[in-house]
Length: 212
View 1 (cartoon, rainbow, N blue to C red):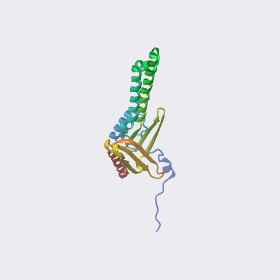
View 2 (cartoon, one colour):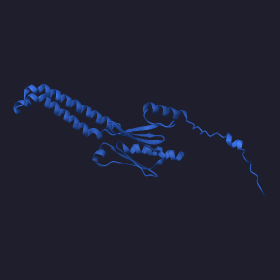
View 3 (cartoon, rainbow, N blue to C red):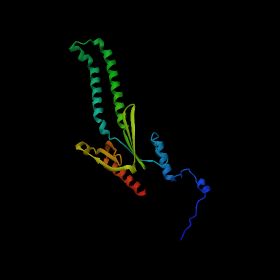
């Protein structure tokens, strides 16, 4: 037997909309998105994306440079204040004391600016977990910065590591994320409480896979 099927007229085909169907965004998602845009205006978030947590670096990574810079400032300050007592035994001119003070103050200011820049650059390295992706901001220097973004759906493997006494004592370590396909690996070091940070990221990723 022959079965007949209804055919579409050409007018029906041409009357179909070519515009993409808009995605429904709940009020809660919209509110969270707007709040994330207000807190992190430099992030390029989609209209239904919001930040779940911002993961800064542990401050221990900057302790060494900070201690060295403070020690240098103290040594220069001691030399400046003790110059008259130091200059006399070794035969340096006392009349140079005003110039020594000026030079030492300039060195102290330069050290202070250098310390501030080092701390600022270090703390600008951040890791953002959103409901759709992971965003890593890498601040290399004062005028050099790059950003890495990977979708939660593309993450194939995630792990954390804590090595040595210091990392265990101060509860910090590294997080590693690897993607499927091109097998790109993303690493974020000096993460405070990496186990719980990774657990939250993994929980979000699994939840997104189940919904899809």
